[in-house]
Image (tube, rainbow, N blue to C red; front, side):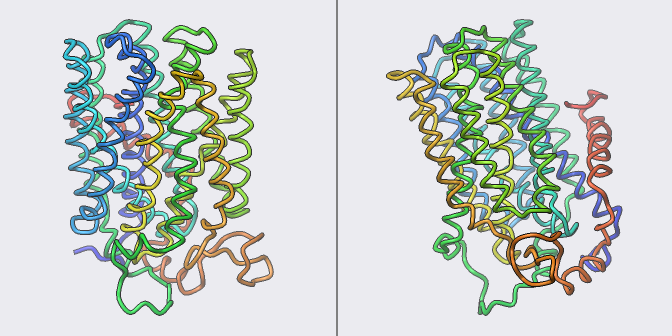
Length: 464
């Protein structure tokens, strides 16, 4: 049996690459749905408020997935959680595509989105818990890169959605082909996952006096959980409101057609991807808190440009700033929630659940307000939550093994290059010596692995 003390660098690298693949495919699945929302609205003849209720179905399923995810991951592990999630994602997407094409109506699509949302929520927690453990093995900031892979997946999905809109490909054909491929590749990738439970026990360096591990309910009672949840809530709303409403806002507010509206979503997702790739070294250099505050300010400026400037090119510049500002909040929140390996699964689940309130309450709230004041007016609500995320950013300060020493060697939180404490760093070297694996190599390997793992699905080509 392979243990943390004998795990080799290639094994650890394969684990990290597999996490990259899962994040990418999860994003591709979600954007496959998001990119076809205009066609779904046209098929149903739905109002803005009715579309908000439809998206609520996916949010309800996601909350269910997040609720059970803490138990599933704690008991069965992240690998099994993603296996279950892949089945739910495939079932929900196939059923939704058929329901749209055959005109089965609002209720059938709503039910399908509940199954899809459940798989999405479960996959979200599972891949973040495994990703946080892999990040600790590397001794450096990797989580934003994982989420950059997610953004690459959403970028590819949105681009394919815009192309499918342009070519008038039936929603059922689009959904079925994509989700069958992505689920098959995901199931192959998770075979490379390591046991994050055993690893967490080995790397924990927190010596605080905790007699017994905290239960999932006790984790909810911690103020840090709530504050990190506020960060994730605000940034998830900043990201989610764009995913749900940006194409329709550009169509209704700026007069673009369906394909162009989907194309603007692609611009937003590209900005998210760039922000996450560029953000990792910035977080290592300056820490989570300053970057979170700057991110919130940039997101507010960008959203304001979109809403208040009646000029399409400038509005698109605002979309870029909005995407850059929203890009790092969720991954930094997940890293902060996983700082203590003893409570990582429970705390990531709790924080993600708080964040998904944005996806649960956001669509119907914005849809309801949009019916009365227009989508641009409704998006003003997002300002409040982004500002709240910026104000709560201090809760994401690095702790335990992730703490950032000062340049002078103290234990402050500003300046200096982040590093693990000496005892933790030595242990990490014993575990896999993965500190020498550079992020560019990992990302390149992730791409080639995605190509290789897509072969068992029968397609012979990369799912992306």
